[in-house]
Every structure is written in structure tokens, then in C-alpha cells.
Image (cartoon, rainbow, N blue to C red; front, top):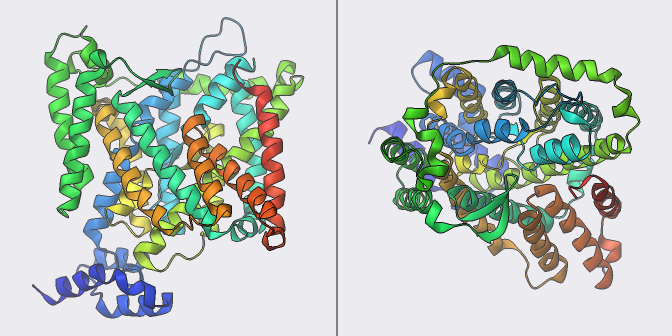
Length: 510
């Protein structure tokens, strides 16, 4: 083994020293062990992303980025499929254009991932938030009667407030007031939420309007995707625990080949391949791009600013408040969990990056302006971090793949969701390990952890779990005689979340 390989192996295997080291000591040890590449271009990349301080390895950054993308690429088909069902506010004008949503989703996701990587230097991917897309499309656009134009305008206005708050010290102040036990609770909840999304996408759960139901699906119809998805998960676990680099990516790509062969050879009307339809080569539509549809989504939205129906509806103003709160705490809670996860890997991420918070909020604004639902940091980023990603290079890889997906979408679309969903279950397995650090004997952490997990899964919305974690913590601290130990900001947030639930009730689907 050469000197460079030996030193990098030492950096990888010494994470147990973090418990006895300060961040400065860890950074110094990493610098002493790291050897920069002799290649000028690679050396520049390593220096820019601070490979030496973070103890990063180029191969793992790339594998981590690819793994994260493979884990979340389902959003490129799921989001357009869900949001394209939203009609125009103008009767007879038709629904929001499918390709327009896909193009906006891939474009803004790619740009924001690259910006996140280059300026915040964390391996966190951004794309349109699941749950939020259903809220914007179904609750606001359809049930709220605002059409897709009104729903996009609502997200634009809420994002302006979101960006304003993120540019001030307020968001960082709020984050610093959150107890570590609540951050752990939110992280565990997110892990189980992702796993719940995974088993649903495999076909295990019944669905209604794209939302998983607490009911086992018709297994005789879904047995093939369930089997393929489950085998993919088993393969990931086997490769991961054998410490094979790129375990998630290898499993997804290899099982996708099998899924494509089966979906393309079995009878096309077979219920067994209903969830594998995207992998059927016989239904391949070629290289078609409806850019006129994208332009129509955009122009229709901006013309609707003059529609009085939007501004006279109470749903508009309630929705602006609700969407802003969900954006704020969905992303904040997820970012806090990732910061903790990265800190376990590097001992360098003690606080959430202010740059990351600003980029996250600006991504939401960019999404609404281009014609897609709000962006947020994606929980599936945990898959890349587990594969060894430590720097923003992994996020840049994500961004490049999102942009390539615009051209290669007909090919990317062949990878079926039941296969990629196995990565979500794996993430949940990895993130549940944090439960060992929860102080279960203290009711002020026991109750909010339980409520956070329960509400994230049961309501299919991360922000709801975050809300219940705060409310549960504040309540338990009061009844256990520790009320004075709670930061005033936490009490304010708890009250705000109660108001949020009341406001949300007025835009829920009936």
C-alpha cells in the first residue's frame, strides 16, 4: 500500500477518536494525514472543497453524489405526475403541463445543488419536496380553487418571506435555541419517514392521490415490484455491511437492468408490472421535449397576478402562511439532522451553515418562478453521506446529474421507482441508529421523539413531525417543573405551530 493510501485509510478508520478530539485537533490530524493529488485539476478540486480538513476521498465524494441522485431521482417522475393534475384557474384552459414541471424541477434542482456544493460545501441535495407538492397541488390548487397559477403565486409570495427571514440572523438564532434532544428526535423521525416512503414506493402500501395509506396494498397485483424492491434492499445491505464502496448505486443499477428486462417482456397489461411501467421499453416515447408547455406554465402564472379571484380568496393568505412555515421548518429540521450526521463523520460541522440556509430559501423562490413546487433539502442526501460523502463536491455531482437528466430523461425514466425506493429504506435503517443517543429516561425527550416519528409518518409531512416535537418538548418541560430551562424562542415556536395547525385546517382536503 502506498503512503497516500495508508494515510487516507487512517483518516477513514479513526472516527472513533472524535469523542476525544476537538474539531481543531481533528482538522489538524486530517491535514497531516492527507496527501494532495499530483494532478493539478484534481488537486485544485481537493483544495477548494477542503478535502484535507474534512478527511474526504475523491472516489467516495463521487460515489456519494451518484448514490444520493439514484435515491431521489424518482422526484423527476413523481412530481410532474402529481402536480400535472392541477387545472388552470381559467375554465377550460387545461391542466399544468407535465414536461414543463419536469423541466423546471430538473433545472432548478440542478442549479441549487451546484450552488449548495460550491458555496456551502456540504453534500446535501435539493429538489422539490414530497408532501409540499401535494399540498400545493391538491390542497391549494384544486380544493382551494386557486388553480395551478394561484398555487404558484402563493409559493412565490411565501418564498419572499422565507428568503427575507433566512437573510437575517433570525433563522440561525432559532436553530441555536433548539435542544440537541429535539434535533435527534427530528433526525430519527426523518429516517423513519424516508423508510416509510420507501416501502410505499415498493408497492407494500395502498395509496390515495399519491399519498401512502395505513393499509397493505393488493399484494397479488404488486408482488413483482415488491420482490424486486426487497431484493434490491437485501443487496444493498449485503454490499454495505461487506463495506463494498458504492453499495447503494451498485444495487440500484444492477437490479434496474433486471427490472427493465422483466417489464419489457411480460404482458404489458399485467398487473404485476403496474409499478414497473416506466421500465417497459415497449412504451418508450423517444426523445420528446415539450418546451412550449413549459412556457405556457410560466406565462399563465404571471398573467394570473391580475386575477381578482386569487386575491379575494382567504385561502390565498392562509396558504402563504402555511407554506412559509412548512418550508422553514421542513428544511431547518432536515438540515439540522444532516449537520448532526455530518458531524459524526467529520467532527467539523457543529452548526448549520448560514450559507446553506440562504441557498435553501432561494431555491424555493427559484422553483416557484420557473413553475414547479417548493424546493427543499432532500432527506435522501443521507444515503450519500452514509456512502462517505463529506464535501460539497457530492452536491455538485447531484446538480450535474439533474441537469443531464433534462437531456437523458427518457433513459433515467427507465429506472423504476420500486428499485430506487430500496435506498430510502436503507437510509431509515442507518438513521435509526441515532435512537441510541436519545435520553429515553427523560420525558421531555421521550415524548417529543415519539410524537415526531408518529406525526411525520401518519401525516406524511416532515414539518408536522417537527411541530409536534416542539409542542411536546415545551409541554413536558412545563409539567416536569423545568419550564425556566426552555429557551423563550422554543415557546414562541410551539405557539406558532399551534397556530399553524389551526390555519392548515382551513386548506385541508375535505
